[in-house]
Image 1 (cartoon, one colour):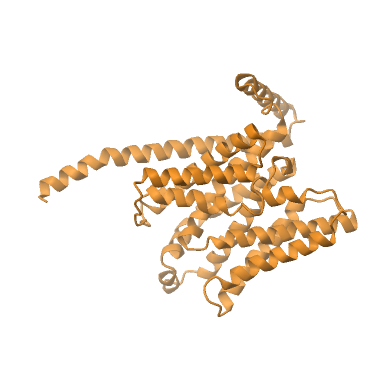
Image 2 (spheres, rainbow, N blue to C red):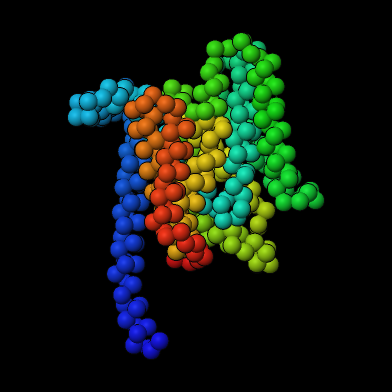
Length: 352
């Protein structure tokens, strides 16, 4: 091919590349606006008795009633639905964000492991509640147990000679076994809906749970933003990162802790069994058509939002569990991305 032909080919691809980048930025911008709006609702619901916040909260409720009138539904006027949707929207941002690193490091199984660890935390919280009458948040107990589990997984991975992901698999089955034993031991002692934590349920999301998800989302986004270059380095070349004297163990630990944080917040709407899917499926869909790691992250977040919003629509419209609805929608997006990519698999660049 002549130099002139190469120049013409590059010129022809520039509009397409610019259009892709514009579409991605618009999608990320819309996702950011929706996420900020949902965070705003969570704050307004918490501070609705304050003078200014009460007026804004009333306006939000009026907006919800208007949506119900326009769509012929009886959903958006209820605060419980808004806090559930707020939690789902935030999950759609942070789960693919962290999942982008996990998938490219072939650590997808760790999301499932930490979900089962968080379930053990819920079981411990239920046992404590039934035994002592404590009325604290089960999610806080699950968060504490999940973070401890993440640290244990990292410790086992660093210090055992087991092959591959054997320590992760042991932790996965062991933590779930502990959770089932505790649940069975305390069966009938409380009226807590354990099924909702297993499969996801919009009714599981409480105002405290929505606020916790909002706080956790800010922590995750800030953590990824502040350590993006380091996480990217260890994701694509961990050995070189060690040679460069980067604290690889510390950043690996940070990644698994952020994963535990995401899992605990997400299991409210997705359930323990399905929560890992949102760490993996949107990233897998984005990887089909993305040309760089940064583009993969952008598209994964966008696809995550499409999955959450589409899943909520299916769940509300047909009265189905939210977790299964969101995951099935995510898989549909994944299959569409395969078709749209022409069944091609491209190497992902760490740049761009």
